[in-house]
Image (cartoon, rainbow, N blue to C red; front, top):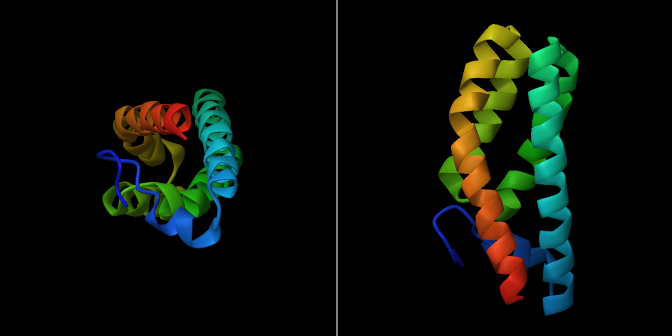
Length: 115
């Protein structure tokens, strides 16, 4: 069930059988998205490729449960890029995805207000 352009709770609802469980999952995702984006940005700024890779891995795991397929796939691809390419390749790809991630965050927060 896609409730906004980037937020899609279809898969999350497969894990949450009650509204309270779904809300808990969405809260956890919101917190993780904020945290991992900050860690990635800090890792890119400091040149810490391992930190970036680990945070991209965490986001890659969450995205299929909460994001539209295109954004989830873009994160999976970016994670793979981070494993194979240097930060000067990974960084610009992440930066290009930031507006979508920020939009997703806005949609997640709107969803939480409605749940």
